[in-house]
Image 1 (tube, rainbow, N blue to C red):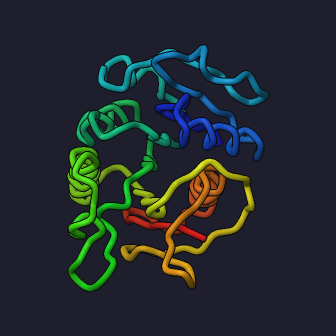
Image 2 (cartoon, rainbow, N blue to C red; image 1 turned 30 degrees about the vertical axis):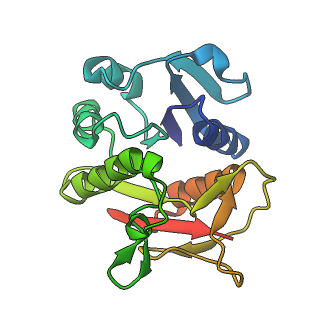
Length: 202
């Protein structure tokens, strides 16, 4: 497939670009600083600012899917408008874990121990997911990670969930950025969560 990755120089974005390219997909890696994107086969680095819809339309026109690894300061409406104008059928989003349930009716963000400094970004992610749920034209997927994303090896395995936080036998919820990328590209290829949210953890 031909895939555009937004935020391609960030921690999640760079791993997704690497995983896509390693599987033979053609990648348009878009970032404000494309020089930060490592050169590799199947990857074309492009300078781009996703907050500018008209410029974004031209960058993504002709791709099969867009993967957004952006922070949530770019509204969902901006990306969705660009995809519709560029006639791109699929959007996959690196989401947040804050809206995952830890018990019926209780989300990660509802825990009194949830760090105050993370709440702004977390609420942005929740608003983004709500906006996607109202979208009828674009085939979207929102991928909430485990509670802890960390720099670690690519193991190639993980467990899937939907709206509930996935935890291990010790109650921990974690996944490496590398295996988060594996799960994201698996979703791109397998198309299991159309217009839905999913999550993954060890």
